[in-house]
Image 1 (cartoon, rainbow, N blue to C red):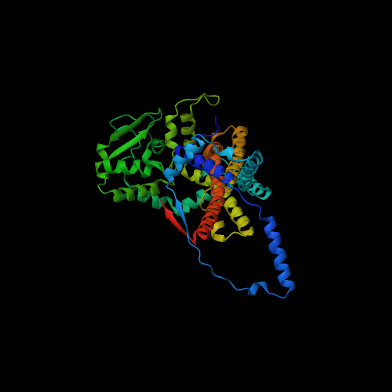
Image 2 (cartoon, helix red, strand yellow; image 1 turned 90 degrees about the horizontal axis):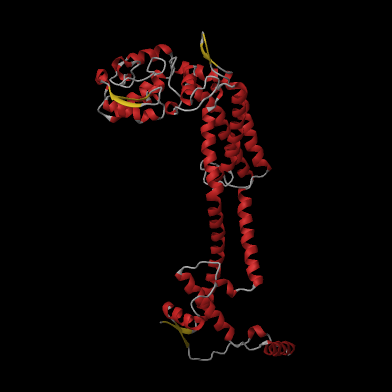
Length: 453
């Protein structure tokens, strides 16, 4: 029984190859070595007599053109099956030495593919350096936000980012904007006085965390929909999802989607630097995680996240933490591009905008290693400080993203891409053989009449 499974067309091809091989073996090829020796002796004699062989006249002789009939594929299939059967195997046409050579060539192509994706010392140095630098920035420069008489304060970099936001969005201007009609939205209730359904935990401190319209990502969809429908969509402190019509805020609705989007962005702007500002992206969804017994007080994950927000883990702090994540992306991508340029690649093909492994085979793995180092350092920071405020949310999002892609690459995509790489190489070599066969047939048929049956 064959170790390969052939399709119907492949089996027909095998049968014809077996038949053609048998026919070629039956051809009696005369030994032309003696005739070649006599020709060489004659040419030598003519040269000794002073004749120049290159100037010999060409004598045209009229010969009747031979007719060649090329049979139909279907007829050839039937004839082959009659002669050699219908269950021929391709590897039976090769000797053991040829089969071993084939395996050696395939293994060599697979090794070539692996080497293309294998990181060298410079690659490892780039991603390791980026990860370590990001970890240092996270530990020493971002710090832990704490409430002080002068507002939230953290590490030097975190303070710089918060000061930049405060300068870019001054408190007085944002207060005026928040009180203007252009920023008023129906999902901005700060307590349950104007709600039909009671929202557990709704207050001036937590309403932005509970209201999904205030989420920097979800708000662009849910918040806009709430503005169009005059609703407020929330996930309360107990994980209950509520979407309710806000009768007292009907004047805050918009009928035009572009006006709703504009109002949503303006409302984001008015809230960004408030004392209990916008939450980190998707932070409100953690209210659904009503499980876990963390810390001395056996708090759930939702309670931990709510406490983090109360202590100042907001969008601005998330932005400052994202800088260390961006450092990894920038350093690794620039280092990768410079190395490619140094190896002789064009600038256009060296700039790693894409994560396509065929265009940039090593880039994704380098980014995965860099983010793994930074995430590991952050895990150590969390362990030693026992403080959830040290969690680098942006870094863990990046690590999760690249971990999923890397796992998918190792388990699924790598073998598929390697098989495709080997097949493409074999196809190109096979195409060269076909081209030579076609050229030989054309030369052979120049002085013959070819009839396709």
